[in-house]
Amino acid sequence: MCSAPTRSELDSPLGEIASREVGDEPASGSAERTLRLMSLLAEEGRPMTLAELTMQLQLPKVTVHRLCANLVAGGFLMRDLDERSFAIGPALRQLAFHALNHGTLRGLRHSVLKTLVDEIGETCNFTTLDGAEVLYLDRVEARRPLRLTIDVGAHVPLHCSASGKLLLAHMPRRQRDTVIRRIPLPALTPHTLTTPEALKAECDEIVARGFARDREEFVPGLIALAVPVRDAQDKVRAAIAVHAPLARLSMAEAETRLDALLRAAQAMGRLL
Image 1 (tube, rainbow, N blue to C red):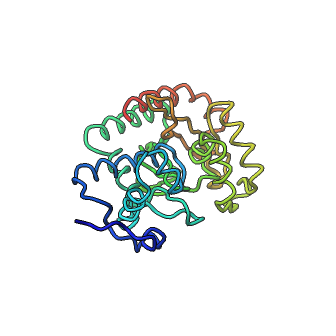
Image 2: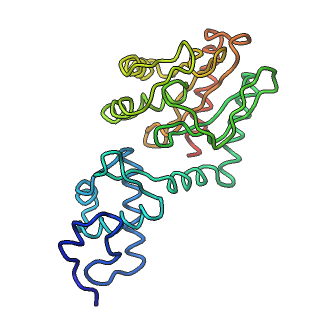
Image 3: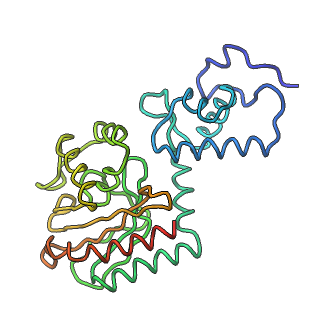
C-alpha cells in the first residue's frame, strides 16, 4: 500500500512530486481526471492556479498536483509566467491542431474555404489561437499573382494580423488585457499598432463592428479582413480571413465580401 505524502512532498517543486497519492486508483479514474483537468483549462482559456483547479474539479489538492506534474512532464501543460499557474502546453496545442485537421472534417472545412475563394477570388485562411500567437489551420490560395504564402501550421503575431486582433478582441476582457500587457508589440510596418492603449481600443471596435481589419499592419501593401467562427455555444473558437495586395483590392472593396465571409464562418462553425 502507498504511504501518505509527507508535508515536504506537498511543498516540493512540481517536478519533484512523487507520482502517487493516498490509496490505489484505477487507471480509468486517473485518465478521466486528467481529461477533466485539460478540458477545464482549455475551456477557461487562461492560466489557472492549483487552488482554482482543485476547487473547480472538486478533487484533493494532492491529486490535482500529481496530475499537473505528469502533464507538465509530458508537455501537455506548462507553468505560466508567474510560476504559480498552469497553462495549456505545446503537446496539448499540437493535439488540438491534429484533432481539428483530422480526416473527414478537415476535408469538409477545406471545402468551405475553397468555395469561399472561388466566390471572392482571393486567398482565404482558417486560423485559431495558439498561446499568444495565431495558428494557421488551413488555407486556400487564389490563383492570382502577388500572393503571400503562409504554410498551414505556421504562426503569425496577434497584434498586427486581422485574425489575431479578432481572436484577441473576443477573449474575456481581463484575459485580453493581460495578454496585451505581456506580448511584444513590434512595428512590422509603419501602420502597426504598437501601444497597449491603441490595441485595446482596436479590440473594442472589432467587437462592436463584428470583424477585424489589417490595414497593412503585418506586411506592407497587404490588407486583410477576418470574421469570427463560433461553436455551438456561441464561443469564438477560430477565424476566417481573406487577404490580398492593396494594389488589387482596396479595403472598401474587401468589405463588400463580408457577407460571403460570414456565410463561410457559419458553415465552418458547424464543423468544429
